[in-house]
Amino acid sequence: MTTQQEAIRPRSYTVEDGGRLNNFAIEPKMYVDEVSRVGFTDYAERLNGRLAMVGFVSLLALELLTGKGLVALLSSLQ
Image 1 (cartoon, rainbow, N blue to C red):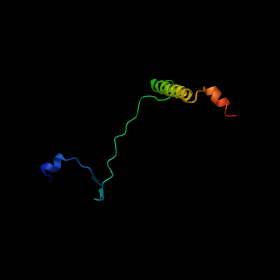
Image 2 (cartoon, helix red, strand yellow):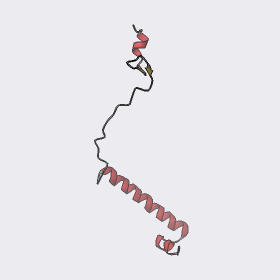
Image 3 (cartoon, one colour):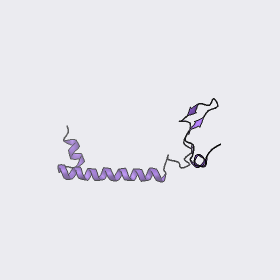
Image 4 (cartoon, rainbow, N blue to C red):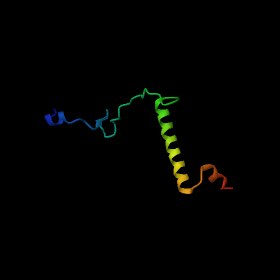
């Protein structure tokens, strides 16, 4: 017989068939992501565009800080 307070509170534990307490038996609900993340998807194109913008801005910053472009900087490494 449960009291009203125990009935309101959700169970955060389970008891197995042998009567032993198992605190870690509650697992998260499984789901399948139906959105494809491979190929020419909106997600991939958005990520590609963002990375291209970061690369372009970093090249501009490199040229402003060093006074040389990327080709001149790479040719001076030899």
